[in-house]
Image (cartoon, rainbow, N blue to C red; front, side, top):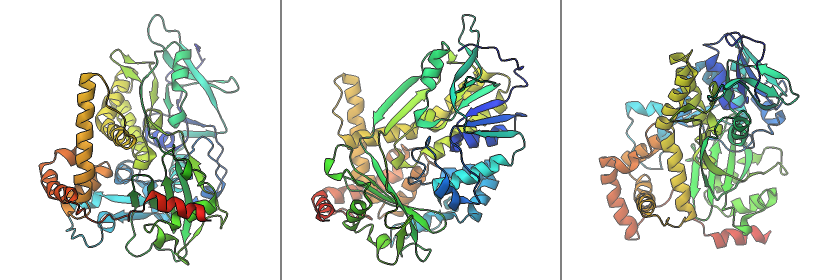
Length: 496
């Protein structure tokens, strides 16, 4: 829709559509550069006294993962330390735990401390707590207006004059125009940006997608004594081949358990029933210490909910091509641009990193939205694309996707499968027994090193090869999450 709002571009605010983690972070950072920032959020978050009340009362229909498990990787903490330290302090005051690298090492591993280990710290936190802390920080900024209960129907654009359109605002659901100097799409994986751009005559973004083949069930608990079971302080994860299971430590004595079965496995459907979910967990020895009598209780009591999330796919959208931005003055960040399988915990780090990159783009090119868009796209591809590609590669291997027919594509796919084979049978088992491989893998997991390091670093390769030989000889190091066969777990599930 073309329009000419009666507000001068310099006087118009920056408008951010979506008030989740990506949108709030962008508002917090862009408030340094503009006299007015307006955040438009469809959901209404009532006033609460703190994170416990936020978890109980906030209904985030626009954020399907709001009450699912989250792992706030070390990259998140480093972004907060560098750019939003008051958010980290608020999280600490709310009872968020900072779990150091040594606390996540396999039992008995001789991990000698190194100076840069202080960067590898996991924030144990619920999504509601993190969003509450970030929102409180944004609300403290006098030049940021947070408008909730407001939906956006589309973009406003100035006449194109034969060129690509220039976005000058948004149109609300009730038809009201809101002028904007810049518009930032932070609406997440369900962003309607392609339709919005098409409506103003802009090209469609290039899009790449890959199914994850998985759905997720999550339930939250509180530790009765306020501390995790012995030897289980950090994130606990197991990929049993036929199902993924993870235990995520949270703030204020909480934790969550997520089960991710293949979407096509009919026998593992229906885990949203709390009784079936708990029967399934009882079949997994890796979960038993957390659900032992007297250790924990479900939030909400015995009938407290088990939440399901499906229709998950890795999706990447790029809003800049060889000619420049698809629409001047329009930026997309977070899951609206780079969305990967939630099991890898990269959604929030990517959102925060892109918010920082957007601020850098504006700081460098405040009066040149074309150069700013190119900077955001270029740096996002350099810093985030490798992690998105790694997620796609892992999911393709798990799905057993057949080789493509085109020779070059088949060769690339064969190389990907070979690297994946070595990673699964050499690097991952080595990380259970070798502190150097463990540290290298954890730095990659926390988005502090690029994913390819685990396969290209000579030292990691050399240390992984003997373990690969052990695996091929049938002497694989014991997994940190004990294996359970599907048949046994399904039988336990159906016994009632």
